[in-house]
Length: 182
Image (tube, rainbow, N blue to C red; front, side, top):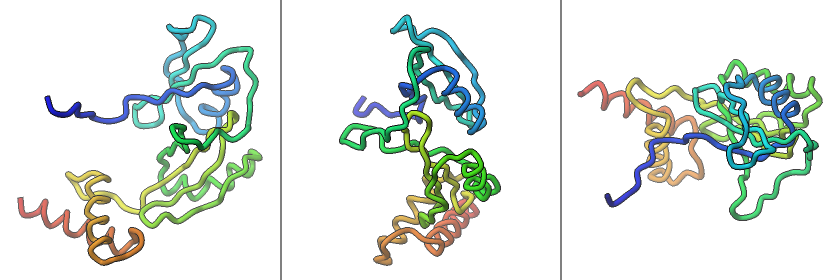
């Protein structure tokens, strides 16, 4: 075996404050189902909360009843997590800023990333979160990664700074034609 071939993200685990704060935010604000709550098998005085991030993949938290929220932004040093991006539909994306503002959660407002749209904010423990939606739907039989790889190649060949709508449209057209010829 030359490579250890991964097949996707299994789960992400964060150190959180306490059970109530994490459940209130991730279930109450972001709508993630709490699917498992059990002791942390490595640290007896901690709980291990498992949330469905919306696609069946898990986001987990180690929490302790004695911990308080600390909204200090998490460090952005080498080796640390810069942010966690979560997928939302375009319909939800258009309402995120209003909802976050109603809840008193500071946010960046909408940001155009060329191939996707983003809004950033922090959870009660200072973790930067991004709610993002792609500007495209991959052709049948293709993945988001297929479209982005194709669009990247088109962008580089054109000498453009970043991927934009024209690169995405061309990539989708080419991928669609490739699938039709099979």
